[in-house]
Length: 356
Image 1: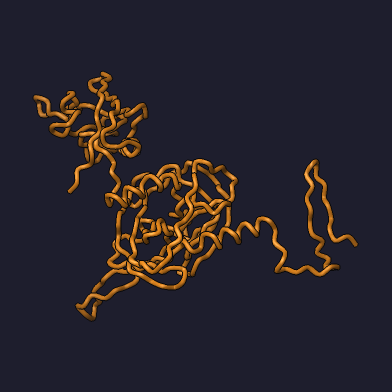
Image 2: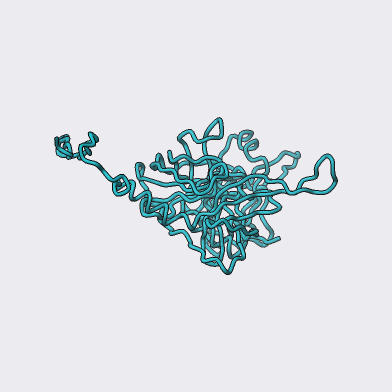
């Protein structure tokens, strides 16, 4: 009996082991190429993956003394050799205390360095000079294609490093963040991402970080084949700002958008960002951009409605914020508006955000 059977399909030759066991096979020495790749990636990336515990202080009904109560768990990964950890914002949201547990079981209290609820990202720091931190290898999410293999490593349900394997199911998805802002260009994967995986790395077949696992879409909250990850190219842009400033340095245009914008857009049957007011001393004020005004009979009169910035259409505040995030203070952008059925154009220099 032959030990191997060959199936020839067109021009493709597929070799299948003969499992008749006429010849004994040493399982410890037998691995498919895909199995070897999975094992290598897990060994490479596991030292970079950490377990995060979020605790809050609450008062019990029987005592006025506050007690520390676990609020949830998640995953993170080592960003740099000096103890910086990246995870999801919602993993550490409203925490009084955050504990990071390394692969060797040692635990350290972490302090927040920077938070960005709009992109569901957070940077923590742990003081552990004796630890030899292993940063994750960064990849390029723009190179991903539907069908590419991806691997998620995390701590689902509080279990230590667990690996799941899948493929990129779709690219360019949008999900809502904690702040109700849209996170764009999100990676969709069928790799199982369960509670506790949030904040963990999504890796390609070279063991490089291509995304941060952030959410699952499921009525039950358990993985049902649709998981999402923030692309690493977004992470590479935001994390350095969180480290340097504690927040994302999104520039400002110099205008105040109208509150409850959806109501007024529907009321007036328009699209774009309605300017409520312009900031004194800003380029919009100097160039004559106008906010809402009250007519002689007390009626509200529309001023400028922003419909385009830097060649990109602006339909609402989410479009506006997404475009502004692509620029830096000092950049000059062309802003197009509508006012009294006239199209106006302004060249505006973006300013640094106002710190409080």
